[in-house]
Image (tube, rainbow, N blue to C red; front, side, top):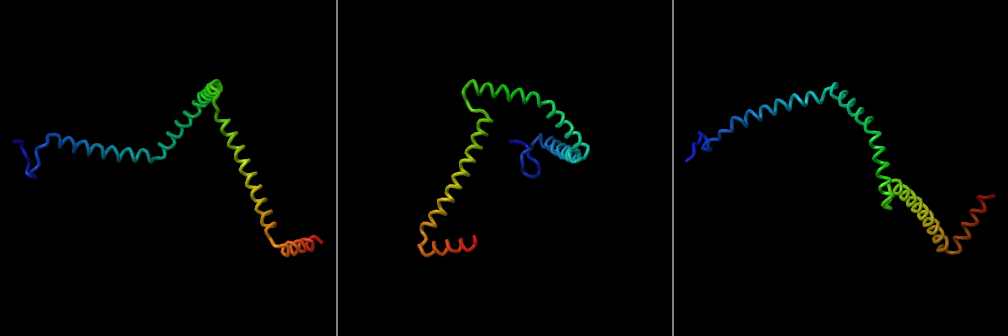
Length: 129
């Protein structure tokens, strides 16, 4: 049958290459970790990112305009339409909450026995004087 080594495992001609590959990957990994964690790398990558973002501003504006026109032609809402709608909904929710609080307050006053109402009214009148 096949050849085997002393451990009883079959002979693998690529075992040495795997070992070399693993050692090489470990060495490169250590070197790259040191390089990436350096101050120089941070400054360089920051400068490259800044240059990219600055260069991409006109493209992004052109893309936004094109997308807005395409959505308007298709009678579909744009991002600004959704933002406007969300702001309106928030205002409506706040008004509903205010109305709910007023109704709760009115219901509590209406549910109180007449004696408590009169005593509260008297207290308010005393505080007002």
